[in-house]
Length: 182
Ligand SMILES: Cc1cc2nc3c(=O)[nH]c(=O)nc-3n(C[C@H](O)[C@H](O)[C@H](O)COP(=O)(O)O)c2cc1C
Image (cartoon, rainbow, N blue to C red; front, top):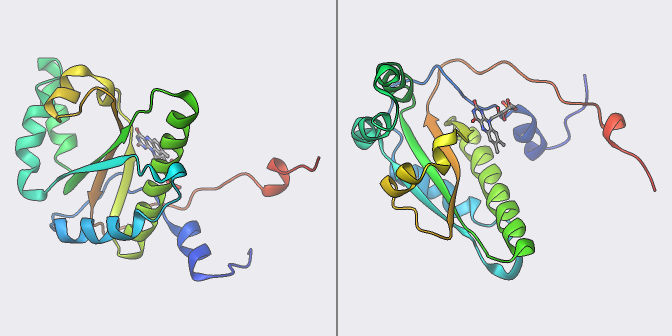
């Protein structure tokens, strides 16, 4: 058993993506905002803070899911409706796309750091999160539905919900396999 050094290391190691088994318990907007208050202290080059977030509450979920499933072929809609009604709420992470490549990459890295902060903070509060990137995040019809503007990119379709059963622990490559010296 490897020695875990700190509370932070413990949360980093124990956090899991929660992909199913969500309960019906509501995810309050106030909690999501509280988590974002801390998560936004992620590193961000040029202090661009290239992000915004769209929350879909438990109350608004079924209306969102109806709009979302209408983008799928008719014969898939019932199954998609069932699948997307499982999480209790959603959060969309939207990045500002800088036209300059280096700044675009920095913005993508910064929002990814912010999202990992969010995932860790949520885990600490027993809120399940799964950062998802289905193809629809790049579908012009879906972007329009979400009010995403040219020059913005949906980076995460984040599923949220409380859960009863922790997902099984996953393994990672040993550090010796990914570490070398110059
Ligand atoms: C950028 C990104 C995109 C992801 N997209 C999906 C996805 O579309 N569907 C999904 O089930 N999981 C997605 N995941 C979650 C990964 O599958 C998950 O992190 C991985 O299986 C490791 O599990 P863990 O997070 O519990 O350690 C994504 C994770 C990241 C970082």
